Length: 295
Image 1: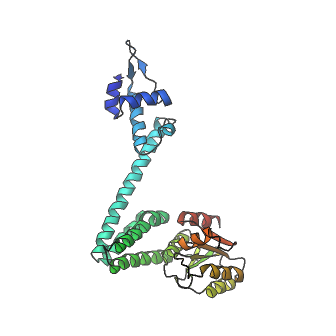
Image 2: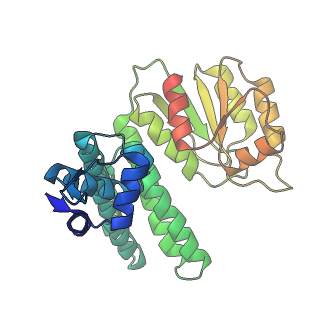
Image 3: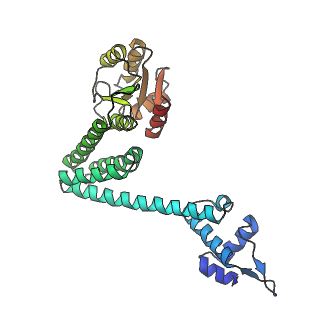
């Protein structure tokens, strides 16, 4: 049996916190010695230690106190695994930027390949490629890197995604989607991300690239049997007529083909209530995957 001072030293919790957790949440119910002082068993000390670890990972004591010892340990192990994954991702990102800054194109492609092989498609985009592209953009804006460095990374990402789309591509599925951007929109990475996710789930995926006239989207919808066309819109300025182009596509296309739109420009149009009523708004890549699975 351990005194409250010993329990504090063994768990890393202060005496005050142990008392508060007992009083508010019945975290543990210690026995009393002949002097009516708290004494703690091995199991109670172990539980306090588990509760401390769980709260250290950001979980609220009011939630984790309801868990038994096995459930607490599973939660801790999961967080440890997540932390290990984050550490691996961070090391890969550091290696990637080392290659980019040293103009090592082959090394950059190799690191991207490692990331692709060790992560799920959604994790690859959310936890690795997006942070990498955002960081290289920030470095360029701060004058810390060159356009060539940015192009090495963005071109490597583009090659990786297109290569994997071809690997995943199937021709026997009943679901098909087309991807592209409207005239004047040269930012294609969001469209590529979604096309990659689509191919990884086994759907037919037709990636047409950036800067496509609205008329071509209409022709595709009317002369093929695609289920949906995803139009990525990143930029939106006062001179931009993307809202009008979307209206035209929605009015002229085969109504069996859904029109999906995503990106900062699409979100901005939605806030301004300038998005056609029959457009499906994609909020982010996770939202896209959910809608794709429901399709």
